[in-house]
Image (cartoon, rainbow, N blue to C red):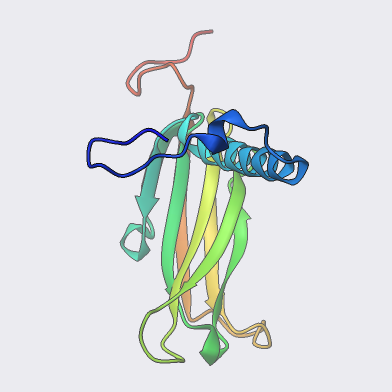
Length: 165
């Protein structure tokens, strides 16, 4: 058996003997899982940049290029019954691709962050409207409202240029 630089014996048996059938299946499974993660991760990153907004952007506007991703992050405490409800999402210029809630790290009942990711699909304008309310209080005004005007520009057109035609 050959020795390494540190004098430790190195066995090359695992490289010279054929793998067992179960090992081959395991390696193929791991390879497929890794390929899936790579493809899923690249779905967002290859299409454009990520633009993040929060409560401070309510009432404002944002410009995106087709292919960019808009992420809205708002504080939410579902233990109080209040949740953010998407009222309008500026279709067909953007589409919702992900909605998730991340609990805070502090004590139970402290709330967390609700995040929405929207993909800019095609040029145009629209509004995203979210209402923070309890589902059983539909006749009452919402506790909070988040509104954002969205302008999606053609992917390769600079922001200051005019469309052709």
